[in-house]
Structures are given as structure tokens and as C-alpha cells.
Image (tube, rainbow, N blue to C red):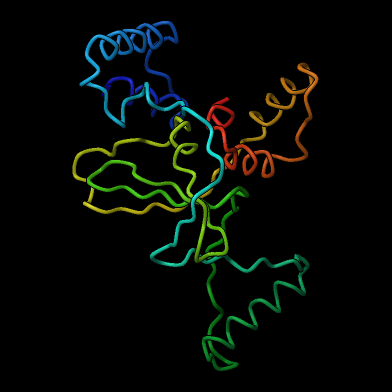
Length: 210
């Protein structure tokens, strides 16, 4: 299990595979055989337990202990919009007109579906959408199918840890997905953000896994 988890991280997160696919598949089948012969060894964080089982009839509500707030979107991307933004920041900071310029750190934003991952004693126990910021949806079964998300954290993790981020599709994966959809005569998706959000909000975890 530890080896497969390490290989998953290298492949899906670091984009640096450590073993050939055939070797990974061999180890995975070996683990399946061990667990079939000894069911008492099956654990929730086992790589074999990633693909969800029976579909759910609805998502359960999750109340966030700390609200998941959203960042206000700036729609004016002109020079005037930047000047107005800086003026608002200076006003909120109560800066004098002759105060030095404000330094900004700027980075591109991933556009996906906001997600909260809750770990207890190093184990993933819940995945939830942002919802309205106070109440979201429990999508744990679907989150577990995403191989870049660890089911167990490395030793030394705090007893309780909540990780917040974005579920997203890279453009290359989105293009491959749409090509498969078109070849199968299925509907194609409009953009990566909608495809990522739609894939996570499936009542059948097997659809998310696919």
C-alpha cells in the first residue's frame, strides 16, 4: 500500500513516474489478491478502495466549522480597473496620499470547484464542496477516486487538518476527455471548469473515477 501510494504521488502530482505502468499494475493486482485472501487487512486508505461503490441518492449537507469564503472577482481588467483597485486598497489601509506605493504579489488563479478536505489522525475522512460558504455538500466518495489526493498523510501530520483548494482539469486532460466523449457519441464539455465541477458532483462515484 505504501509503495502504491508513493507511486501515485509521483505519477499524478509530480508528473514523474517511478515505475513502468506494468509494474504498478502488477503490484496493484498483488494487493487485490492479498486483500481478497485476508479481508481483515483491507483499510479505508488502501489504493484498492479508491473507486466508489453504489451510487448515492443525494449529497449529504456539510456545515463548515470555518466558513469557506470566496474572493471577490475583479471584472475590470483595464488600467483604470487596476488604478481603482489600488485606490480602494489604500483607502481600506487608511494610507495618506503621500504614503509609499503598495507592493502587490500577484499570481494566476486556478479556476475550478472549491473543495475542503478534512483529515483526522492523518486519514481522509471527508471531502466537501464550498456550497454557499457555510453549508456545502459531502462528496467524500467522489474525492476518494482522485489519485492526486492522498487517502493517508505522511507521518507527523497534525491530529486534525483541513486542506482547501480547487478541483480542476488541466487543458490537456480536458481535450483528451472531450475527444473520448466525441468518439463515444457522448456530449462534449464547454470548458474545463464546468467539466471538473460536474465530474465531482456525481451521485455515482464510478463516473467521477472515469
